[in-house]
Amino acid sequence: MKNRLPKQIKLIPISEAARVLGVSIDTVRRWDKSGVLHSERPDGKNRYFSQLELEKHKSSQPLSISEAAKELGISAITLRRFEARNLIKPIRNSAGERAYTKDSLNEFLDSNYLLKQKKVQEKESEPQPLEKLERPNLKPRSILPHFLAITVALFLLLETIAISNIKLSEAKSSQPLQSTVPAAVLPETTKTEKTVETNEAGIPSTDIVEPKVILIVKINDGADMVNIRQKPTTDSEIVGKAQDGETFEFISLDSGWYGIKLDSGSTGFISARYIDTEGSNK
Picture 1: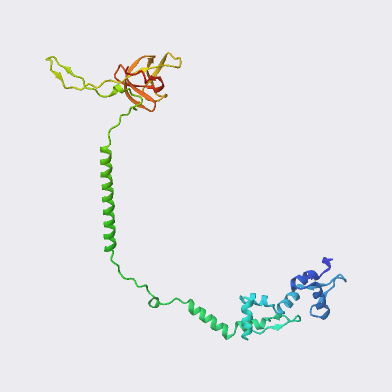
Picture 2: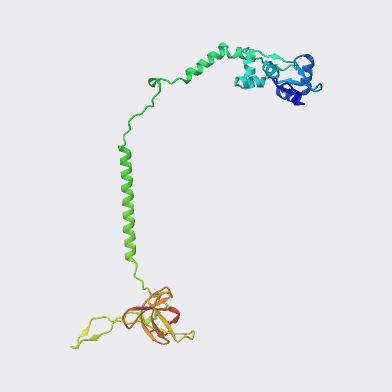
């Protein structure tokens, strides 16, 4: 059917013509009957319309208020204000609605009012000379008062820190020294006692002899011997063995391990659970 249509003129069916014009199919039929539009029926039945004629008809028709506002780049409310000031005059279509012709829009664009508005906008957008620009009132301010205030505050802070350190040192020096061995572990015989010894001439010696704290090994888990380690941890190297009832001189107590003096003069460590604290020094 479409192959029978003339190739030199592009014809479109009535449904597409209604879409181009933005109206209903019935309106297109009515305009065709009244002579507003001209259709062709190459197949002898259906109406076809020239797309060129439709475009010309559409461009010659008045615009609605929304279309006119879009064409001018303003809102519909602004367009009504211009109409109230008689700057643009609309017409009324068959439905009594506002409509604007192309000529009325062009007259508005060439009006003196719009030309004056453009000149005002151009003048406002022009850069102003530098001498006319307002300069801030910048007065030189002396920084000496601020510098003095910061210096005084820093001096007071350093003086406060120095006084605090002095008080802390005095408090530490006034505290009595405490033994690293808990009192509950050491027997009462660990107190310092003075012994009077005489030299070869029979003169009493003034040396003070400190009694030694002796620790006794006690094995309760059925083992024959316990390990003596180089450091107070089970991961440390084994430096010796101790039997049940064997005694050693106490050196220190560290995290559940007793430091003991070995025959070589070095220090070894035995776990506290293998030391008889009650039988020591008895």
